Image (cartoon, rainbow, N blue to C red; front, side):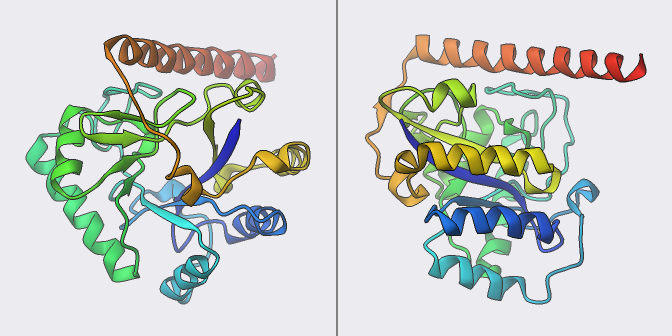
Length: 254
């Protein structure tokens, strides 16, 4: 299995200490990830540190390391209770919003990124949630890729290319063939998360690839059965996470 890395919630005021630790692991092992940059962050949950003095200069440093970039929504604000076509969560910045409004949000986000020096055709939906209108609007605004979905290969659907993420990290990376993406949120990572990632990289180092190489992977076509299976997997994972959270809260209370 070929393994790519994506990092969510990149903002000028993220937790830079945690991000730097993750960055060092990646640099030490020659791994060039995909960064999901929020164009105009208004989500207080992502405001974890001091504002970077020159975020645009930082982006140029990442470019020199051949890191890739995606547009991670617009303001990263969840305004609907919709899970959309990939219901890992039952909230969204996009799903349930009119196509006209979504197109404007995507256009505004793209313009903000261009001001930062980022020109990308990869989209990363906050909360992994999007709907059919999102896909239409993305295509009309020049996007080609969405970093989401489940499966072992990039696939084409609705004239866009989906770059799947891991369903079950430990099981997915043990497969002999295919591609997957490991997703990280530095703002919320704990010591055990960093240690686990370092251990995983040490064990599977030869299988990690740059995100740019992931974009070169063969693309397959996804049919109706594939869509139904993926929707079911996303729904099941959401329910399992909910049950796990309830159980943990109960254990803490006891």
